[in-house]
Length: 422
Image 1 (cartoon, rainbow, N blue to C red):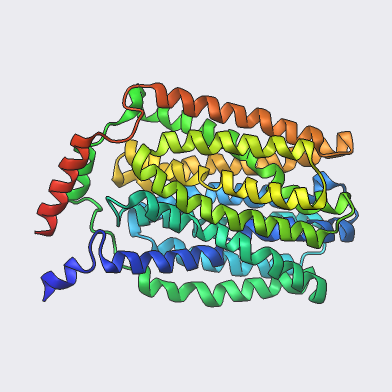
Image 2: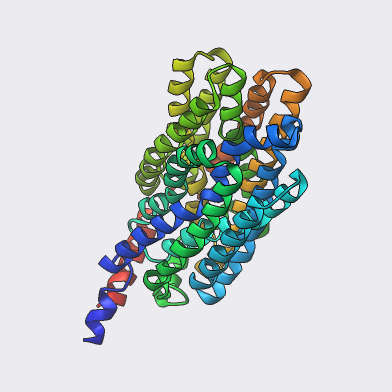
């Protein structure tokens, strides 16, 4: 009986897939901390009477909280399992959004977004790292699916937030979000409390033995290179994601159209993330990162040449379709080239760099707009940063063992998995 229960709660088991579904829903709820600020940016700017760059500060601080929180929550995950960060995240989101609703200055509103970002971080990197421990042959698609919770949230939350901002005001909307998060996130602990069977086990050791590691770099050097790549790609990524709502308002289309474009962008990002998982299981994380980053640059270039309403809808959909697979690839790369016992912490550090990139890019684009009076130079700035990411991905891919795992490694790993289950 115990053997049967262990089999059905192990790697690649039905329980693992059920757990994945729970993680996606939790990630969808918790990701509100990333997507509410772009929607309320025009309303906050109007109420406090500040410049666009100042109004972008809450998003920047939310991303800093998300970035630093990813490392802290990653350490908690490696040490105690996923339950600890989920509890912390639910409490932080609840308190942060309620405090934001009662903020009577832009500075206070911006500062509480550090706490909001911290709460959201618990439902991204830790869930990705934890889920990766439950899958072997389907790790790429599993990581892509769980990371899509962030984009499911990006699809659902912007129109919902925009509706309540228009009908109830941004303050009541923030208070309502805080109460909702606190009440709905904690029940998912029932599905996620079990620790991964791969942590510290023979299966993990077999994976390490059969996996090419390091790319000819020390672990810390590879970590630094991945952080630079993550920073660069997300400076580029943040331009449309943070400013598309305000951009549409400036063009005279209205902020509601911009919120729809953001939702459309992230909806197509879901397809991209899942497709990237299938691709990564076949060609490897580095090659998929290079492909996705190159296509993201193509979409950014299109924003420079087309600004009609229909064109912006189409380009926003393409941007989401092209860039959605970028961030999950860092999880695949980390799991391929670093030890499973430090996966959540290592991934948290890389994701911290990507979120610093989002924070820097969101603020930088606002500054460029204030200086030039348009977003053209901001899109060009994003293209330059995107080129840095493409160059790093290409350089890593060309190094020894930069491709996908060898057939021998796959066979060795499969043999150990079979022995562990038998």
